[in-house]
Length: 545
Image (tube, helix red, strand yellow):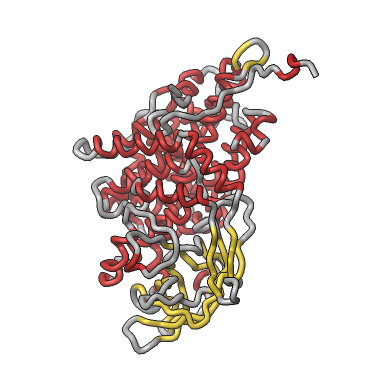
């Protein structure tokens, strides 16, 4: 065969060896905006180190290996003893170790902790998204445990530790632990109040034995779990440790691991409790109220995680188009491709700006910001996570056939994309949560309107969209059937207001013209041709040294 047939031309160099954080202008600007000057230098150093690690060939290889070698369930040892352990590829542990050491389970007790962690989560998830599940659960368990000061004192230092310790041992022998969650059951799914797992009180204060089956248990290899079960006083929250204080294994029978569409590196399983020791968290009968702050925190991670997937997909698409030539020049210079890339970049920027604004609200922790989150968080979770799959799919298409093969990494992003829309309550759950906030907490709508009102007068299309939203809210007849439409408007108005305030004029103009002004088609790449699309694309292009 002639050597000339193997000459490689017009192939794109890999997007590797770059600083994922520094190359993301939108995220960098959000960190500058939301972190006080006194904390900012330390945070920027942390995020720069994490960004360079995330963009390294090493981290990319870890991500590929962790997904090529999914976790394996080992129920028994060679002698027939029940062990219920999940074995992972070493790359999974390397990814987790790096994430924990970077503080991605530590937000609640350090200055600007939520913005720093959200930015880090957005950066590091671009290396590999699956291991974000135990990171998210561990981080989110803190507010639930704080309902019991004794439990918080024992567990919070381990949950927020910057040390990852592999394997199951008594917590007192570990410098750091991971947590999972088990709420979903076969018969109820989202309707957790129909759970049938029973909790029988013991003589010890707050101690119970659990019996039941959890249909989805997140991160079953973790050191502890927050679960819901029916106690004599009603549905309650419990802490289930994998290893008891005396060193024996708690009863935690992993029946199988789920064979999932994506999220292949991470384990999700079915577990059975049969006389499983548990410690109650919060009051008996107040389980949902106790665990709701954990759910809220993981919902924010759904938004951040989706923003991360979108950013990586768009970065890959723009990088490819900058190096790939067709019809006499680089794809990035072709008007139609530029329109597609700019449209995708708008979606990515809007998601990132919104995610970071929500994280900043957590850091502020005022009554006003808590009210704002009550409405803005489920609206953002509804919209951003749904947009993720569409964005990643279109970005994959920008790479053509090269994007459809596993080596590009794009199929892995696409398989991962639907997860965050389903996890922690699918779209209808989020929409109904927004309705509940409107009906029960008028201060939530007031806080939301004050937030978007900060951009009033800056763009006539945004002003009109706010007016239309208020008109929609004036008539709540049959509102449940149109809840998705309403929540979509909440999210788009909020994104538009943030971009008008903080993004360059060309970005805000393009977003408001298309998403709020209606000058847009039904697919990506249908932005008004008169906009400054080249500047939008240039802003989103990852800078590689």
